[in-house]
Image (cartoon, rainbow, N blue to C red; front, side):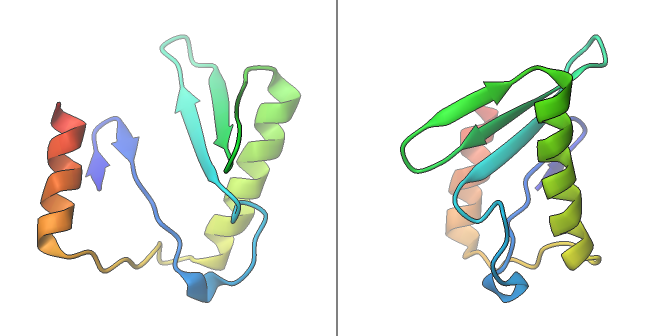
Length: 90
């Protein structure tokens, strides 16, 4: 799903093993132009605000995107997609 201020991406298993496979990564650009990274795993989540860790997470993201130059391909049942989109509006 794309919105003016967000993008949700899901990587297919066909991409193979990658550094971000164990959790989720959120890169946020704040109104002041700075970027933060939120990495969430099975048991823990961490917000990175300092420049060097954010650069590291952005690099992992860029490497993964390079493996899928046409973007992720996801097949989601329509009913499940509707529930997901409606939850974003709440």
